[in-house]
Image (tube, rainbow, N blue to C red; front, side):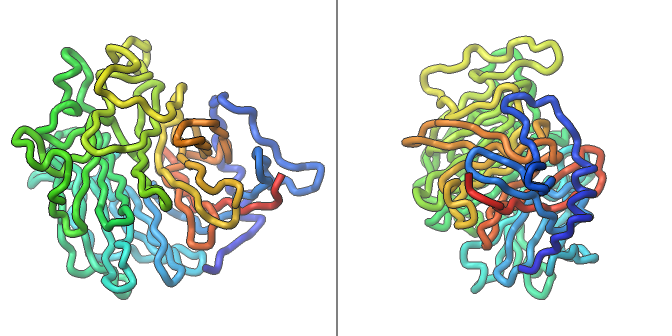
Length: 401
């Protein structure tokens, strides 16, 4: 893919960075001794943040097309094309009805594993009811042909209707066997009273769940709750809060997710079928503001511990397991975007357990999505809380350390 790499654009991007108080790691510094003021240092690489395209409003998800184009969702309800380093001026027509506002809107986008033969893409979004008084998380499948959507078909609607506009979850991922995984958040259901009665602990709805579907939205016969009359058959795991990162390990086929804690306690989880991940009964966060306790404990029998938690919270969003050749010493590392933290977190694992965490691209802005490009570079969608237009950027190595 042809990219626009302009120092003037990078300088403008740098001026727009917002400084945060995240203090979990020493701040990165530019390599001024070499004269390269835009070079950043990490443990293993010196690297640059290079602009790819600009002018996006609340970008949420990135997908790479075989010919080199990129699809990017904008939360206000637009699907955009980036072609030859330029944002195409016209949004893609043919989207379903979308409930925008708050955290809701058009959210994730992914390609079918056999896109080159069937042209299917999948979109997650906030779906309105008839009078827009309530919304839920939904998934639509469509063919992307000649920059348009055809054969548009809703394949999933979550049993998670509320009047609120938050915690949709909405990340999508395919595994190596062709199953589609979907995250649905807890829709900001209040954790109060008997925490075991919270909707995320109730298998008769989709609040706070990860789902496993066939590519047409039908339910696989070996899902863990498919024969349970007191559970919805799509559910693969439950007890989640708001999972805005989802990835399948390209080598092991393991499903990984991150999710927002409240005030602290963001989690990185390895997702196993039928397991309970604890929200809100157990966790590491506290209530917003005063910091009053939420959970009964940080762990409990029958509820899964996270592989890693971020306390203080970085507000996780986007998840990617790196396998590319541009940063070979990062292969197998887990990358997570941070919204409030305005960082990219690089987590290393050893025998499936947490080993270390390094913060990259500090203060670049709210990192909404993280994807590995077909060229092996790491692509980030940068968001601005107030709706100012923001870019897609990528990390390029300068030198190994």
